[in-house]
Image (cartoon, rainbow, N blue to C red):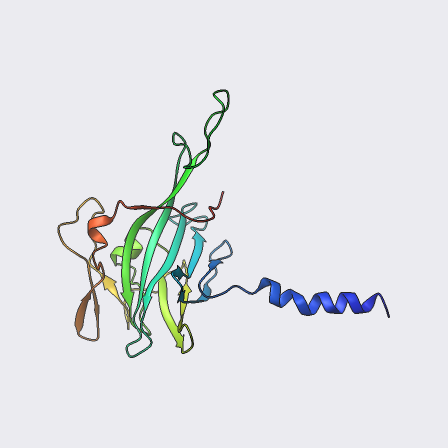
Length: 212
């Protein structure tokens, strides 16, 4: 009996230890399956999903970060998301790190902003939109819940959400061209899907803990 009690106590504690806060990193399992996470913003920390393109997909092996930039808990419950891709620069020393002359500097990791989109509730990134064409994982604004802070449930599905129905489509444009902002259409109206991000497509953003 004495041996059973510690085991039961550990089993009860595991859910508490493994729980991920909505403002933290959420790691999507590898492969083609779908994944969802409740994201929020708290004290400057933005919830985000880490995902790697599955084998057989045009984005296979590419590492992405889908980060919540803003969320409004009132109809139509818009969630603005940024898509970053991780890059490695083998020729740069990570800031704050020094090495003896005999030891080559370690690689520097950074996030490259690819796209930004604002999704109202029930909408998703269409297959013909700039978000998907840039290689970013297809996403949808699935559900919302009140609280402090309020949360939005973001679904990621590498199979895509198609090109019809109630969806959000951004105008496709080469990443090297920033003469205009892509637009997101829904409900007979259009809202900007760039929100100033188009002019800073080559902005590099450092990540707190990089995936090796």
